[in-house]
Length: 598
Image (cartoon, rainbow, N blue to C red; front, side):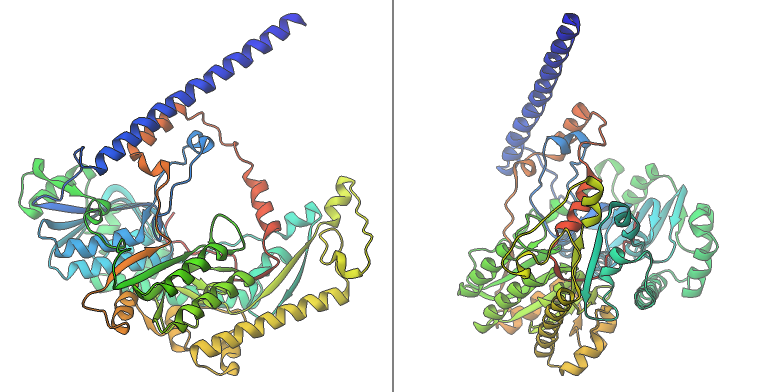
């Protein structure tokens, strides 16, 4: 027994010292990383310069998000290796604009990997590449394997290359949704629903095991329109291809075919290994291979002041509203943080107009209403407000958008989903399985309503349904007012249905198909400052301590302390907790995501 005690004690000491050693390593790396980052910022270290005969390299790999956000890492994240800093759409787009005019940039090299983004994000990048192409500068693209999203962007290139053993992972468009009813039945959790709208299918994952017919029909339409648009874009630049030919190849196993077939059918120009690309690029701009200078989007945008004009007297504010609309959470669109920013911009005389960049599937109906009211206040100051829609601006995301003076959307944006639902979990079955019983003593029945531990009766369900219907009427009225439509017209196109932006423009939910840049220019013209406006991005980006550390040092930390642990966090429990802790009355689009990548 004494021996076992000493062994346990010794193992505890060893574990403690190992942990301290690891923290010391991380501490040293963090310290030197911060010093290096500060030195680089002060010009004391050699950064990649945009010298003569440079090539802008666009690496389509990893997650692509809307705009920079502070990196949030902890010790567990380092252990798991979650230290990648995602690329941002605004940096990519602005770098392509700058590269088109920069005399030192001679060409664009699109290097494709497994980029993860929604269709509208890929389309925004493609439109920026298309504008770059107007400069007359050449574009080459290479990949070990193309996904639909990366190939859609690369299809604009003058030359498209593929690894001889690479693949064309193009399979059409679709989305897989999770249905939780079977899991909830096993746990003993029942979801009680009140909703408005035949197509408001956001509740289906909790009360069904499959899509309803209306939900399936709207997704079929959504995907078909988007797929046709993407095929048309590809065929415009790849003359050997046609829409029907792409469908035929996809249906007959394009993904599992050889690179030779991709060359033969016209998807790519040549199958080559990546090591040969430097020679081809050097020949393209007529320089020695050793003198090639590759510049990243961040290198290029880092030399321009775009988005930082916080002291300008002719300011167009670009306010990002990204993620799910939540009440008080640290992630997503927190109305408690966003509303004060909107109010401040409304009262700042130097802010002449605003573009609200929305990329949200919706969320809390209450939070949506608070943000909408703040935007109304901004417009009451006589300042123009435009909305630029990203991947999604649906349900609550549309609620906060619909009263703007002008609404722009990418052709592949998903919008609409005008509807509200209430979702009250009843965990009585679970508590009974756990042997836990709840009793309530109150002066009124409503004191314990709603309860998570017993089902609602008919009267309570009717009260919830009435509350949801009143919220829906408020939503309909806001859309009718903002879009200058009759309530009857809005009700016909509402019902919780999601729309592709091209169709949304036809029915009046969107004004124009265009980019964030288009929305900014419109706002500047409307505010009569087009010749002198500057852009400031909000919420103002304030880097975290992790953002001060170059990516190289973080990767060293990952290699040194990665313990191969995949179970540091109980992801499954967090997922269920997220479902149960959501606001009970939501304006949110259905739980699906379309990603043109893997």
